[in-house]
Length: 305
Ligand SMILES: NC(=O)c1ccc[n+]([C@@H]2O[C@H](COP(=O)([O-])OP(=O)(O)OC[C@H]3O[C@@H](n4cnc5c(N)ncnc54)[C@H](OP(=O)(O)O)[C@@H]3O)[C@@H](O)[C@H]2O)c1
Image (cartoon, rainbow, N blue to C red; front, top):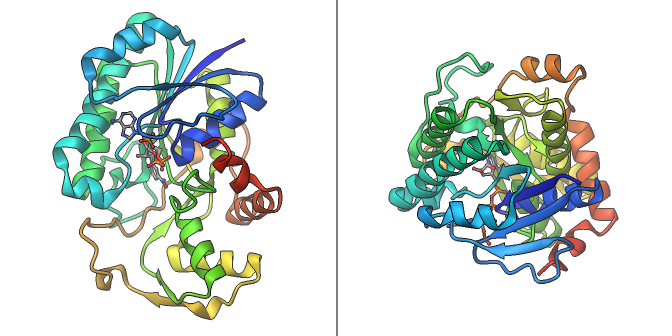
C-alpha cells in the first residue's frame, strides 16, 4: 500500500485530496499546522513547516513513498502583509522538502500556482518565462525554483481550483455560494480570467500523474477559461440563486492590496498529451461541485474537525 504524506492536509486541496486518496486505497498521513482534524479517517500530525530543521526528522518518523506538498501561505493579502513568512513557507520549506525527497528517493508533487504569470498576455505554456506579480506569486515561483534545484524528478503542478473546504469559506466558489444563499449582493470581476478545476478533479489528476511517473512542470487546469464574474453566475444558475445579486466590476476598482494577474489562461496541452486524455471543461467541474453539495460533502469535511 502506498504511504502518502499530504502537507497542508487541513487546507482546501489537502483535505479533499487526502480523503480521495484514502478512498483510492492509499495509506495517508496528513500534516496540519493549526487545525487538529481529530476525526479525519487518516493519520494526522501537527508540523510547523517554518521550522525547517525539524522537517527531515519528521519525515524519518513516517517514511512515506510519496509526498504531495499542499501546505502554503496561500492567501494573497496575508502574503502581501508578511513577505518573510511567505518566503519561508512557500519557498524555503518547499526547497527543504524537495531536498529531503531527493536524498531519500521519495516521489514528490509540489503544488504551485497559475499566478506565476503576470496575466498580461494569457495562453501561457510551460515553456513561457514566469513573471509573478506580488509577494504571494513571487514566493511561489521561488518555491518552484528551489524545488527544481533540489529535485529534478518531482512534479511541479501549477493549479487553480475551487471546492468545499473545512472552514466553509476558503474557496471562491464558497464565497459565491454563501453570499448568494444568504441573499447578499456581491461583486464579480469581469476582467480576471482563470481556468479552475473542481478540487476532487484536481486531486484525481494529480494521483494519475504520479501513477504515470510524470515529472517536471505541468499546468493542471481546466481546458476552458472564464471570468470570475461568469464563474459566480454559473454557480448562481446551478444552485438556483438570483444571479442579479452579482454586480460585474473591474478588479482595478476592488481596493485589494495584492496585485492580481488578469488573464490566467494557461495551456494544458502538455498534460493532455502525456495523460492521453482531455482535461475537464467548466460545466463538468461545476456539476461535480453541485453534486458534492447534494451528497453532503461540506458536512463530511467539517466532521473531520
Ligand atoms: N486555492 C486556490 O485556488 C489556489 C490557486 C493556486 C494555487 N494554490 C496552491 O495550492 C496549494 C493549496 O492551497 P489551498 O487553497 O488548499 O490552501 P489553504 O486552504 O489555505 O491551506 C493551507 C494549508 O497550509 C497549512 N499551513 C499553513 N501554514 C503552515 C505552516 N507554518 N506549517 C505547516 N502547514 C502550514 C495549513 O494548515 P492549518 O490550516 O492546519 O493551519 C493548511 O493546511 C498551495 O500551494 C497554494 O499556493 C491554491
